[in-house]
Amino acid sequence: MTEVLAPRLGVNIDHVATLRNARGGPRPDPIRAALMAIDAGADGVTAHLREDRRHITDLDMTRLKAAISKPLNFEMAATEQMLDIALLICPHAACLVPEKRTERTTEGGLDVVRTHDYLVPYVDQLNRGGVRVSLFIEPSRDAIDAAASIQAPVIELHTGAWCHAREVGDFNRADHEFERIAQAVEYAAKKGIEVHAGHGLDYDTARQISALGKIAELNIGHFLIGEAVFVGLSQAVHQMRCAIREGRASLS
Image (cartoon, rainbow, N blue to C red; front, top):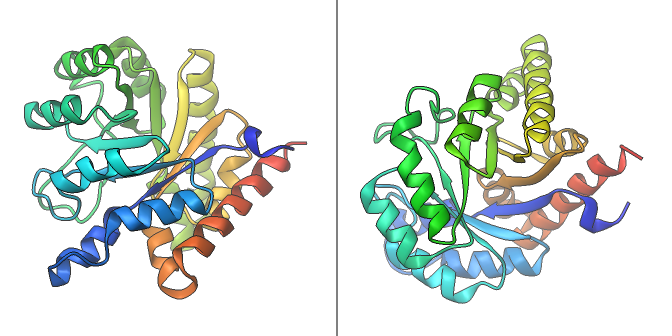
């Protein structure tokens, strides 16, 4: 199976900025990490500009857009400030995610059913601004139906519950969560929505989820930056690309 048929890999470089900000100063530079990831085979770069600027900064986003040759995926909360920044930077894509000041990382998908009417103008303005919108949601039919109603062309399924269940050895729960993901992928694809996935993925889970043939893209960050400490970022991205290819090749 050829490379082009495998899911795309978006590398999230947030936690390079986390490391930089822990000490202060310019290093390590997340833009350098983004360029290295692309050279190693990443199909795009993801960065989350949080409202508290705990890792990626406004300047990072501007520099990323200017420096990289691959698509930039701007993860953002649905706020007027973030909308203005996204429309100014004009990344290839914007992924709307839930955000809490007290959380360490994103804890789940957007409640697109409850916030449907609130999200509509954000999705509309981003679409009209030439930014491809995705919604980070839970793998459920209700959430997918709401995303379709909001007219988001892409969804990104939250894989955190599945990955966590595997990590703690709760394999019954893991099987249940993976089945939810598999069913959601099929349901979204039938509705004409492009399906991405991410959160908590490692080599093994990326390999397994890549075997779902309608997954178009995986966005992976924390694991790859952690692996880079031991093997280097280029090697970590290369190994992830291999895992993704192996998973998709298992369909043949």
